[in-house]
Image (cartoon, rainbow, N blue to C red; front, side, top):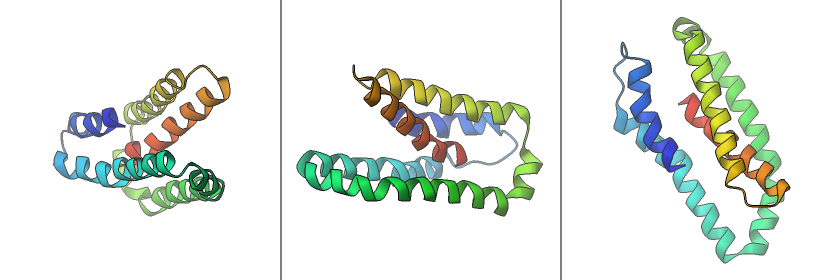
Length: 133
């Protein structure tokens, strides 16, 4: 997560030199949208394990549905902008970022294979929002 917050504001201006990108605004968005919710979730998990398991059953399907809806709506709403700046290089960089995120989560997921897969998918999914920003 910290790597994503540090990496994205640095790399975006390099990928899009023709666009004026406010790196602090990007970092602030990532902190507010990714880091703070993660910290809140970790605190709830540490202090209220039973509540965290209950909320996980409710929020997991909702988060998948919201992720799908956000990606779909962003593609629809921004289709003209995306097609204007879209190039194969940017697409592959975004995909590579998600794949690398998956493997980082997988290898840091402990010794249990199910935990490794879950953490890998969670890390890769979480970083889709960073790619979209």
